[in-house]
Image (tube, rainbow, N blue to C red):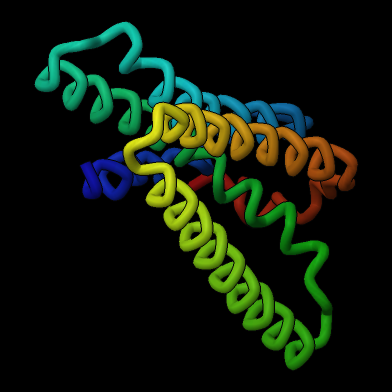
Length: 168
């Protein structure tokens, strides 16, 4: 399953053609992010309820993950370009900012992973373990919705997307 996102991300080559068709891509970019995480988090969480055979589950996971990444791949460059506007203009400050954000992101994701793993291991033989995992997954989707809400408040400067939207 781990190689599926890499294969599906090959669809990012179509980003230019797809994004150039939208005069106001902000809603499209935000919607694509919501759809991606709905598939990636919610669909993979709900699917095992309906699919009980292990082989079929694996196939369904692969299909859902492929569709999620293939759908999102053409839009992700537009989001990156949009957010680049908020980086510091000075090269040294921008480099420090990007480095700091990557360090903080790595630390936070590692801490959350470690703490949630410890918590689920503590409840290993408890009937609450599955419920806790479900709560974590739904909480993750809630965080995505909060992120998208704040992202929607940021102004999208169409000028910034122009280099990305140049027709080949």
